[in-house]
Each structure stands twice: as C-alpha cells, then as structure tokens.
Length: 260
Image (cartoon, rainbow, N blue to C red; front, top):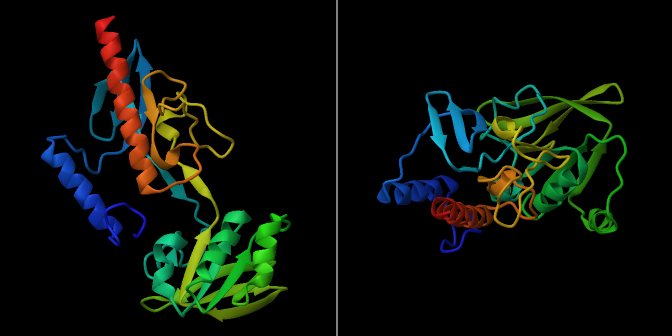
C-alpha cells in the first residue's frame, strides 16, 4: 500500500495491526470474529444482534464495506491470493513484466485492465458484456494501449495451475482454448454489505448507503462510513475521514440530547 499518509509503503495487514494497537491503547473493547446479523431501532435505542450476543446503543456507526462479486469460475476460490485477485491497485506491482488476464464487465473492468498494462507485459481482457458503450476517453486509451488485447464472446471455464495460477481454459466460438497467464484479475462488480441495516437506510441503485455530510443515514444516529457509502473515492484514508466525521457528529448529537 502506497497511498496512506505517513507511510511511503506499508502492507495492508500491518497498517490494520497499527490501527488495532491504537484502539487497545485507548482501552476500546474489540469484538473480533463476531458477525453482525441485524440492527433494529426501537424507542430511540439500537439493538445490535450478533452471532454471539446482543448489544444496545443510542448510536451506531456502520462501516461493513463491500464484497467483490465472484463469477464462480472453477479454480477462482482455490487460487485466491495465489494468482487470483480482485484488486489491481493492490496487486498489480506483483505482476511487473508478467502476463495477466482480466475477466469482468463494465467500465470498471476496462479501467482496471488499463491500469494493469502499466505493470504487466501483456493483459488479456475478457469482457462479459455483450454490448457496452465506453466514454470517449476510455475508447481512445484502449486504442493507444499496445499490450492490451480484448477477447469478446468467450466463456472462461477454469483457472488452472499447480501451486499458483498457470493458465485459463475458455471456450470461444465453440472451440476450447488455453491461455498461459501468471495472474487473473476479476472485476464483476461490488456488493455493499448492507444486509444488517437495509431496513434503516436509503441506498443508491448499486446498493451503497446514502448519507448527509455528517455521515448520518435516514435513520437518526445511525451513521455509515467507508466503502459502504455512496462516494467518489474509496480508500482507507477517506474511510478514516468518514469515521472521524461520524464519531464527532454522534458525540455532538448525543450531548445535545442529554442536555435537552
């Protein structure tokens, strides 16, 4: 990771460890490995049902992020972290000078494939869209990118390899083919993890939670922060900003309630 202030380069796991150490230093209780099943509000009190216990609170800051949409390709789960990735920005540097395939749909797949061309020697883009109109700037960039090849109308059936990804098996025009690759990047969309709060929030068509400038949702004192929000830039630094704003707003609103 090279886009978090204060660190020229740091692994995501190590950064999360530093966050955890900071929380512990402030004596903030952590509930690790607990799944939030449902959040309801009754008489101005939130009831947070989890896989272990039920918690009650006057305010909730919800930051469950999103999950990548999987394609269900044979080998997709098996080689996750060993050649299969859902994040070009995270993993592209590992494929410098190598051959990769991108499988996905929409502008996001095109944008991620173009980003990968800065690192990989060759990028094969398997577009799942039957028809797609791209913005002029993307069309122009595709035309000018020499190490990117688009494959349309193909059905990717399997990702194969021994310890790491070695090749793709796909069918095109009723002919089965093999493609040697070092990595496979999948961009089929994002699924916001809103299930526990879906009855308490308003969302976009894509499922991201709509908030005001205080990160508050349509339900008073329920805040949404990070990647689960409708926003322009999804990075850890913007998630931290959302969290700071939400925490301050919650504190302010609760103090006002107490004094009224």
